[in-house]
Image (spheres, rainbow, N blue to C red):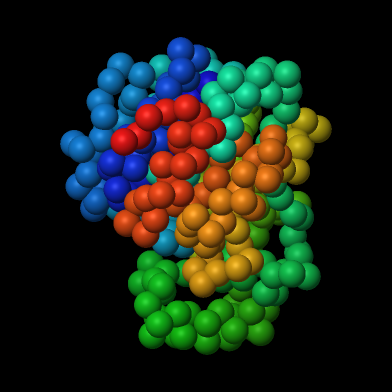
Length: 292
């Protein structure tokens, strides 16, 4: 299996994550945010591969898509893998390597992709504002001032149909979901072949907002792989209790995390700077890795 790890902070924590997942049947493919400057502090071994020309990854921008595609290309250059698991450098395993390996061996051929079809009543404008609005680079920012400007801009464009982008480069059926997924090597190969043959699709997403949550799902669920998709991702993430979303998990969350059993193999997100205890506890109990 291959782990794609997208990371930008806390190299110590990333090394703990890699150590906990290390297994003879696993290799790691890392994209380290270019502006972080932490790659030298991450463990370098033969089973750990780094994207050479890393991106300055920005929230909501196409760079969120491109860094995953760069990891896919790196995987393809190193051989064939039965599964590709996309995780962040702030994830932790919640089960043993053996349990993870056995589950995916038993479910070989299934794609674990959480999704919903658009439009969705739970999303603003059915979530079409992410693709129907043309976003200049400067508008994709999380600052309070730019967020307010962007919202006014979106409202204007979405209220005037002729200002909206034509969606002809996209399939008629659009899908959205978490980009933290587990897909087969064959599915990854299909994605790479699709984007090579569809430059207009790729170009379209360069001016979308948070398009990474639509880009991959729409490709997969408009292909024959849709028949093998299970609408789950085996990951524990708290989008409900806050104060930030997703919640940074601490010792207060321990019982909820560990009660998920085999429903979740990985959890997100954890932060050494906020709570080291939960990280050590989960690694010691669930993966039997000594981190002290």
